[in-house]
Amino acid sequence: MSFKKRVIPALIASAMLMGAPAAHAVQFSGVFVFGDSLSDSGFYRPFLVAIGTPSATAAGLGRFTTNPGPVWAELIAQTYGGNAAPSNAGGGIYAQGGARAQGASASTPPGFAQRPVTTQIDEYLASAGGSANPRALYAVWAGANDIFQNFAGIAGGTVNPTNVINTAAGTEIAQIARLRAAGARYIMVFNLPDLGSTPSFAPSAIGAAGSAAASSLSLGYNATLFAGLAGTKVIPVDAFALFADVKANAAAFGFTNTTGMACNATPPAGLLSCGPGNLVATGAATSFLFADGVHPTTGSHAILADFVKSLIEGPNTYSTMSEVPLSTRAAHIRTLDEGLQAGQRAEIGKLVAFAAGDGGKYDISLNPLSPQSNTKNRGGTVGVSMRASEILTIGAAVGTSTADTNLGSAGKFDLNETAFSLFASVKSEGFYGNFIATSADLKFKNVQRYVKLGIVNRVASSSTNGSNVSMTFALGYDFNVGALSVGPFASITSQVVDVSAFTETGSGSADLNIFQQGRRSRVNSVGLRASAAFGNWTPYARVTVDKETLNGERFVTANPVSVAAGLSYDIPGYRGDESWVTGTIGIRGKITERIGVSLAYSAVSSKQNVKQDGVTAGVTFGF
Image (cartoon, rainbow, N blue to C red; front, side, top):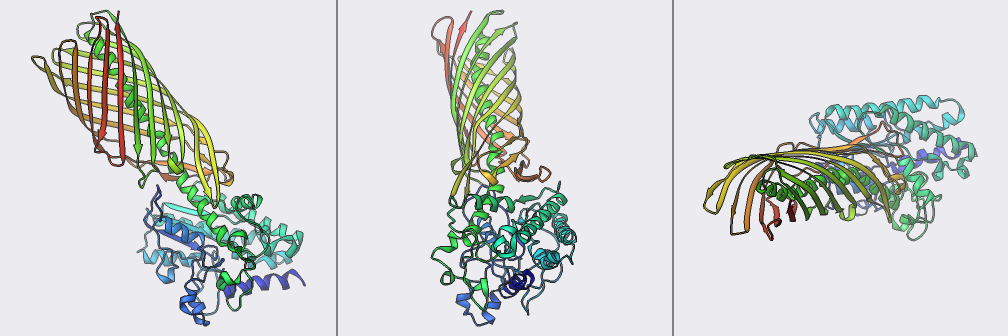
C-alpha cells in the first residue's frame, strides 16, 4: 500500500477522532498555552461524553497521551500558578488537538469549532480585554499539523514544502508578535521534535526517504521559526534537541521502547480514550516514549515539563551570583575599621600595620525571585595606615575572601575575591569624614546547577570571573561627655558588581549560555555610634537604618546552548528589600604599647527573607 493510502488517512482519522504547585523561585500571575494536541489538556472531553463516555470516566481522559497522565502544559500551569484546565472548561490551556497555525484543520471533529492558533489568541485577548498580562507565562507550540496535512502532497511533489514551512512558521511568528504587542513579556516558543523519529514517520513505517523528508521538514520549520524570532526575547524550547537527547539516553530516562506505541487502538475515540486498560504493556505510560504514532507518553511529558522548568529556573538560580559579592564587600569593609581607628590614634608620621579576619553568613530563604541560598563568608585583610597630619589619616589594604554558596536543590557556587582598598579619614575635634575605595577581582568556581529531567538528575557545570568596585563615604560628629563618646553619622556605599558570561556543560540538551549580569547598589545609611573608654579598653556600639536606592527589577539573560545566540531571553533575578537595620557591638584595646586587638559582631535585621551577620577580629602593630 502506498504511503498516501496507508499513513496519511490513519493520521487524519486518528486526529479527527482524538483531537491530537510546588514552591519555585520564579512565580507568574498565570499560565496560558496555545497550540495543538501536544499541549491540549482536554478540549475534547465534551466529545467523549457526546459519544457515550460517562462524564466521571471522561474526566480522566481526553488528552493526547496515556491518560490520566497530564501533559506538559498542565504540569507547568500547576507549577507556576495557572489554571491547567482547557479553555472551554474555564482554564488557561487554549490548545486544541488538530489545530494548525492558521486556517481550517482536517483533524477537527465535526461539531467543534475550527480554532487555529490565530483564533486561540483572539479568544484569550478578548477575554483579557485586549491586553496580555505582563506577569503571566505564555507558550506557543504549533506547526506539526500544518506539516502532517500537507505531507502527502509534499511527498507526491504537488505541494511546495518551502511554502508550507514559510506560511505556518510565519503565522506563528506573527501571533507571537501579537502577544508581545499586547503586553506579554514571558513567551515560550517550542520548535518541532524530529518527526522522522516518531513511529508514524520512521523508516519502518514510510521508508528511509519518507522518514528523511519528515526530519528535513522538522529542521526547516525550526530554522525558519527561530530565525524569524531572533532578537524578540522569547524563551526558545528546543524540543528537537530534548527528544534527541532522551532517545539517545533512553535507558537512563527509564524508557525501554522508543519506537513503538504504548496505546492499543481504542475506538471510537482513539488516543483520547487511552487509559491504563488500553496499554500494550504494564507501565507503558512511563516506559514507552510514544503513546501513538506521534504523541508523547505521560513519562515523556513529565520530562518535557522539567525541561521547561529548567529554562525558567536556571537563569534565576544564577541571579545570586551578583548579589553575594555585596556581602563579601561588607565583610571586607568591616576588616578595615580597626586599621583606620588605629591610624587615627597613632603619632603623626608613624605607620600602623593591621590584620583582620571576618567570618559570617548571608542566607536568603526561598522567595518568588530567588532559590534558597546559604552563604558562608570568610575573609582576611592586611594593610597599613598612617596619620599623615593632625587631621588626616590615610591607608591601604589588600584582602581576600571566599564565599561558599549552597543553593539547595538548585545548585551551588564558590566565590574567591581579591580586593585592594585605599582609605582616608579627616578628623577635627568631634567632626570626622571617612572615605574607602575598593576594587576586587571575582572568581566563581565550582559553579553547579542541578537539572532534573524526569528520573534523570544532571549537573550543569561552569566557572566565570567578575569584578566589584565600591566607594563608601561617611560623615559624622561625636559628642564627648567624660569617657563617653556618642554621635550621629550618615554614609553612602555605592557598588558596581559585574559577573562575566559563561557556558554550562554537563546537562546535555538543558545546558545554557548565561550572559553577563550586573548588580548596581547604592545604600544610604543614617545612624548613631557610641563608645566608652575604660583604661586600655573601649567597648563600642553602632546602629544604622539602611536604604537601598538602586533596587529596580533585575534580570538574568540566557539562551540554550543548542539554539542560535540571537534567541536570548530574560528571567527575573533576585531583588532584596529596600530598607533594613544593621547593628554592631565590639571592643578594642591595647595589650602592649604597640599592639592592639579588636573584636566585633555585626548583624542585619528587618530584612525580609535574609539572615546576615559576621564576626570580625583584628590586630594592630604600631611602629
